[in-house]
Image (cartoon, rainbow, N blue to C red; front, side, top):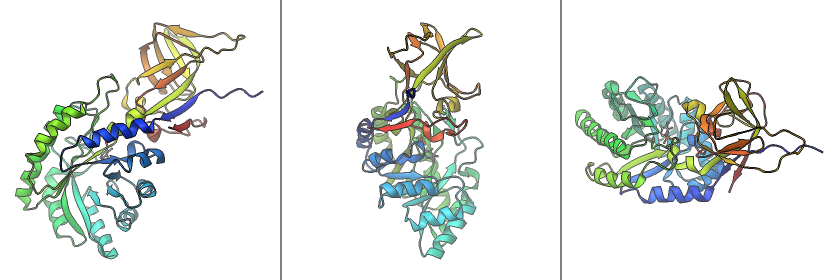
Length: 382
Ligand SMILES: *Cc1c(COP(=O)(O)O)cnc(C)c1O
């Protein structure tokens, strides 16, 4: 008799995903469009669910572009990424992407050269790394030194190149400055800062912006799943704010990842053992950060629930913990393999199953799947 394999799976609720994203898109005011930044989760069923709901996909590699084309051959695609190869640029132009988001002056030249050679004109947005300061969020991509975008101070040179180079057509600016912002007010204040910045650039450089891309960065509250970003409050404020935008900004693009897909995914994993070492209760699961690296990457304790399983072999002891803090760790031989720390549980025993919620974004996608060569989790879409 072979032993049954312990539970270890990702489960995605595609119906809930479609409902959530449908509502998010429906609440957007005029001129605003929602693209899906597929690096958050590029699984085919997720992309196929989102293709008819989102305005299109934001991709940042040739591989992501191919995934976008596979589910939506004629859909809109925005091509970004901080280090595009000449080959990827050519692939993007040949595939007829809607726009490229440009990260440097050299990249503008590369795009112009390739486009000229292919007999095309590439519509581009210049990605700007603003001087800041910005609202508080978990990750900041701008307002401090990062590898992203064009330094605001170098913008005159970049705009000149975008206007003068023969293979590119300047369409506007792209600003993606932070990630996991939980405050609608702070997000609106940031967009208002974008408005003032872009208006001043239009004046200073004598250009007209048709498209403004305000990036993603709408957050998910992992610390309290019941208190999520208030999209209605945000879009109410957004409608008022967009009313103050110049009329020639015909399109305002959002490209969100986390906020669209986080809630649709759960990571379920069976407790293999429970033990106490040096005063700490450890819950050891079949799985870990090689499947779900998000908590260790963000240094947070990921929320989970316990599904009690009654079946247990009568011949074996069944360790457990009741009403005390536990630390949930995986099967990897490293002390960094921690999913949750010091969380008080009613009861958890060997053989129970833990469900990590809001695991649909930056979960499986960002994990080092083959470290230690354990089997991969199942992926169930329903
Ligand atoms: C990652 C990324 C996004 C999506 O960010 P979220 O925080 O998941 O919404 C959007 N735009 C760019 C350029 C990105 O790198």
